[in-house]
Amino acid sequence: MFIKSSLITLALVLSATSTPLVGGVGTPIAFQKRSALTKDDGSLDYRSAAEQVVRDRNKHRQNLLNLERNRGPEAFNDGAYIPPVATLNLTGTSPGDLHARQAESLTDEANDEYWAGTITIGSNKQSFLIDFDTGSSDLWVPSANCTSSTCNGKDKYNATASTTSVHKSGQFSISYGDGSSVSGPVYTDTVTVAGVTAKNQYFSPVMTLSSSFAGEAMDGILGMAYPAISEFNQNPFFNSAKAQGAVKTGVFAFKLAKSGSELYLGGTNSKLYTGSIEYHTVVGSGFWQIGSGKVQVGSKTVVSNIQTIIDSGTTLVYGPPSQVATLYASIPGSKAAGNGFYTFPCTSVPNNVAFSWGGKSWTISAANMNLGRASTTRCVGAIVGQDLGLGKNVWLVGDSFMKNVYSVFSFDQNAVGFATLK
Image (cartoon, rainbow, N blue to C red):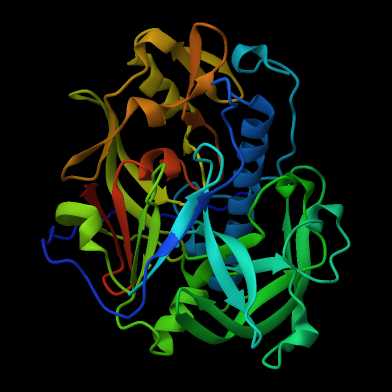
């Protein structure tokens, strides 16, 4: 299926401000990290990386289906389309031929693949470890009635134990590349994150859970994008909290790092960044997507006039294959390694790749550009060439970039902002 629209053609840039957005009450949400793409010996776990690519492709395929259903095809960007369901394929060439003013502390789950924090659901405050995802808009956790072996060892939601639980009509489902899915009924209940509470919040206690989540510390996902890409076609948690007055400002912010990671709800934490926040207006109706972007290698602009979706639920950075090839052509010693991955000499990992949206250039460090070794001499880059169906000039920018900046998401200004980490 191919859907094309020229509705979105231009991004507006807001002036940077030195005044932090603040509001709300409570304490930060500390983060944990998820399963690794890099093994303990420093080599790339190629199977995990390939599974991550498939999961990201299918997550955004579902987002596009939701967007079309909720807002119509006119909401699509130029060149956006519904791609087929991706499946895991480990045959062929691979690198090295290896066959979300409240704050929640986040724990780094295994070498920066994702970050997770604790939430509670229900009148009896059932606890779950959650991946806070700015690239989706729905909340799901395992059900006490989950039939998948993947649910073993995870915290599970018991609807009968909560007096505020309400069963709704409909079904929630996302397909993943291992042939299984995350699916279950639809409920509402009270959801609390670091003292911020949303009542009657839509979510799914899933009955089946894809094996691609096996071995991960997290129980489920809490989406923090716009309602337009919600499978439920309802407000995500943070929008509900804002509408109900649980936070005063519709702003949240992330710091992602090896330690001291944090999600701040209802404002920003000025203790974690210096200088002003550089804001850029969101384009489109569902994603945290900003335009007028460019990619630089040192002082050279290698790709320009791109749009970027800032997605905390994605480990890697994805770009259209031809544009990613252009980027790596400017990195000495780089070589295509199959399935969209590229390698470069481990002795000269690039430390000068940056994104810019008309203001400051925000650089990806060498440590964050390197996914791990493909061989004794070659390392794998964190920027991958993939067509995700999001549009011909759209990049999906995940944690490999976000770890280098303080990232701010403002529903109030309809903007994404970046600031320098302390």
